[in-house]
Length: 148
Image (cartoon, rainbow, N blue to C red; front, side, top):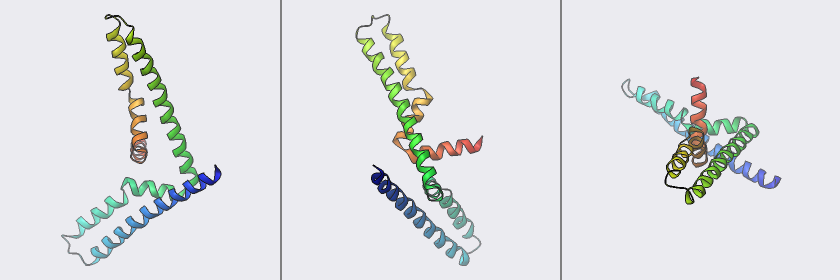
């Protein structure tokens, strides 16, 4: 298992390194172009540079390269928490669906309303978004935390 973790870590490192290298090369190209660009062209080039430097993919890769062990641990914890939430809510939804089979016409609307409430709960929706797009959701959460 440790060997698998090392392989996965190497793949993560390689991927993060490739992202940083590719975006850094684009930034270098922009800076080279900006040196000879007209005053009208420079603002657009520098805006593109800033956009690249602040891109979620680049920031996530940098965080990983700066602290691979810590970032791996944070990711594993976030994955586990999101999975736990989805599993718990899914189990509750399954129980409700099972209960609706034998429910009376009077009981069914309340059960279905509870099911909809669970499906639309912010915690459940955040967990689903995280599992669907971990990188994007990690960055969204960091941005929200920084705003506070």
